[in-house]
Amino acid sequence: MRWRRYIAIAAIPCLFVAGYLVWRAFPRDRVVPAAAGEAVQIFRQRSVGRLSARSGESEPGVYRYSISGEESVDAAGGILSTSHHYRGTSTISMIPTRCGLIERWQVLATRWTEVASCREQGGYRLLSVDEMHEFFGVRRDVLYRCREPVRPGPTKLRPGMEWMGHCATDDSSRKSRFRVLGFQRVRVGGRSFEAVHTLTQLRLLGTYSGSASQEDWRRRSDGLLLRRVSRTLGSFGGTVSADYTESYEIRILTLQPDR
Image (cartoon, rainbow, N blue to C red; front, top):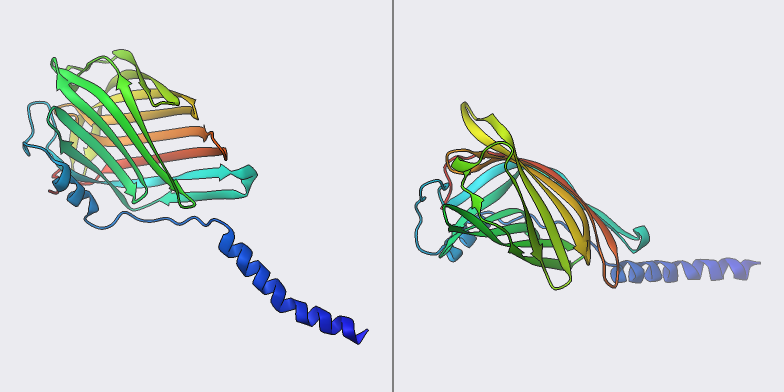
C-alpha cells in the first residue's frame, strides 16, 4: 500500500499547478479609483469657449461630492459576481460646450455618466446620456441619443410640472418621466439654499433592460446639483447575460468649483 502513498504525495504539486492555472484563466475583477486630478484634467481638455456662467447656469468647473453606495453585477449563473463600493468622494464636472453643457459624474476610473444638453428657447434640450461600467476587465460604454422636449430652466420650474422623454441606442432604449415634486431647503455647510426637488423615473428596454429612479435637489437659482439619490435595477443581454444593480447618494461638498 506504500506505493499509493507515494502516488498521492506526488500528485499534490500537480494539484497546486492545476489550481494555479485555473486561477490564472478565471476572469478577475478589480476596482480602479479615479486618479487624483483626473476630473480637472478632463475639464480643461474638453471645455469649449466660455468659462463663466450664463444667467440661470452654475459655474463651469469640477465640484466634489460625498458619496455612499455601490454597484453590483451577477453573471453566468452567479459564477461571476462582484460589487464595487462607492466611498469617500466623487466629482461632477460642468463642462461648457458650443451650445450648452456636459454634466459628467465620475466615481471610479471605470464608472462615469455624462449628460449632454443644449440651451435653447429659454430652457435646455437633452442631447445624449453616456454610461460607462467595467466588470472583470470588460468595459461597457452605452451612448443613448435623445429626443426630448425643451425643459424649462431651474428658475422656471414649478411643482406639478412633468414631461416624457425618449433616448435610444441601436439595440436599447430608455423612456423617462420627469416630475417636479416641489421646493425644499438644502443645507450645505453652514448655509441653506432653496432647491428644486425632482424625480426622474426610467424604463429600460432592449439589450440593457430594467428600471431606474433618480431624485435630484438642484439649487433653484442656477441648477447646481446639491443632492442626488439614485437606484437602478437592470440586466445586460448578449452572449453572457448579467443582472446589474446600483444604488448611491451624493451630497455636494464644494460650492466653488476647481478648474
